[in-house]
Image 1 (cartoon, helix red, strand yellow):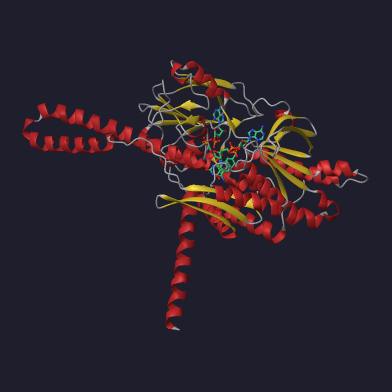
Image 2 (cartoon, rainbow, N blue to C red):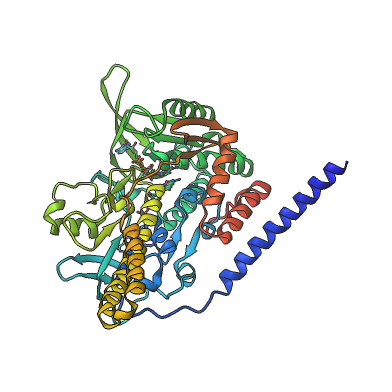
Length: 507
Ligand code: FAD
Ligand code: NAI
């Protein structure tokens, strides 16, 4: 009995401590210390983008060491791993957004932010041309920003491979606006299918949701969509529920090519149970307003043409290089053989340039284009830049101490010791190892409260799938959310959608 009382007391105290810790964190965020103004004698560091790479860099960067300027058309950080959940209203979109102004306010020295898109970079003149592409523009909507050091973290755009009709007729899933559009279109298809006197063929078309691309984006979206239908729409509009269909089209022989074989099989069998059709070895060749035309390779190895009528089409076939990056690559001879983005060296310096670094999906460093890689690259650059600034300070100190040696010969021994100490620190700081990516594993939600995980474990790999993995998926992503505010909002959304169902109103 006494032991239980102690366990109860300890649990109570640790819960109280946890609440106090979170409360203090929130209080500190709401009442930040006054910021110091940037020092004009310091170097100007321009950072493009507010995604995983750039924000990870900003989080760890000592902004007192540079005049930092952030430029991005998106004035918030987006937690992309939970974006598929926003398409069905499992999570509300603002729960996974963190305003960049809030992030920058936490820095010790102030940082300038311009809501703009970089249209070109001139590495010879060391300037970035920017323009305001928002709805409200002032008299000046285009200008140039000079830099001493530049970090490019502009991510990638959606790949369409020039397939006709894709841009005009499909939805993508990369930004908040994409998720909102999908959510609206799902409900539009459902309500239009329920319209009086709708023909059975039209109901079938409207309720056929086609996803192209069997990578993690396509798989997670297909799973979320089927959940939405099974858990909410089927109950609210039962008369059309038998006609709802999700089809996932993939050009390769299987979905989730980057996951281990057993997880691919597990995902495919779970999709079969969930009644999601998977069409592998099927390449989409053309898209029209109401149909998808594809070429499939049958079991006999022969090609056959398929035409699928659809109500909603979501295109998730990976990444393509952004125009600003393409433009820069064309200006640098050393980049002429690079196809997928800016080739960088082991310190993430853009090859063929000086003072330009690249992180995340726009950089080709030999790793997959994931948030995990972008985040680690951003952290690495923060360490590198902090060290570079310290190096400059130490070198300056050594120069000053050395010159004072001649002026104060009486203090020679003391000054020599100080120089030695500074040199020791300098050697330690200068010894920065090249960037090394440490893979923590891959996670994907596959619907029906199941997830798959390929986790790195003591130099080995551990593959698992199912409901417990889903709990792991949830806790991992919750802990990775940007702020306490995001965590609380995401938790609230999960509870809300479980208790009351997802909101099916069409905004
Ligand atoms: P982004 O995060 O895309 O950020 C790019 C930034 O640059 C944005 O702020 C953008 O507005 C800005 N920008 C664009 N053009 C310009 C310009 N011309 N000038 C200035 N700024 C510009 N990865 C994982 O590891 N795990 C996951 O679970 C996962 N889930 C995902 C789910 C979805 C739906 C998607 C789409 C991706 C997911 N990813 C995941 C991949 C991950 O999101 C990307 O690899 C990651 O966002 C790359 O980070 P980044 O900083 O390079 O680019
Ligand atoms: P992807 O590049 O991983 O997959 C795209 C798929 O589309 C490929 O399998 C390709 O074969 C297929 N495809 C291309 N053209 C096609 C066509 N015409 N017809 C049919 N299929 C076609 O792209 P995705 O899923 O958008 O992911 C992008 C990056 O983001 C990846 O690196 C991925 O690992 C990462 N990501 C990670 C997630 C996670 O870890 N949970 C979630 C989402 C994305």
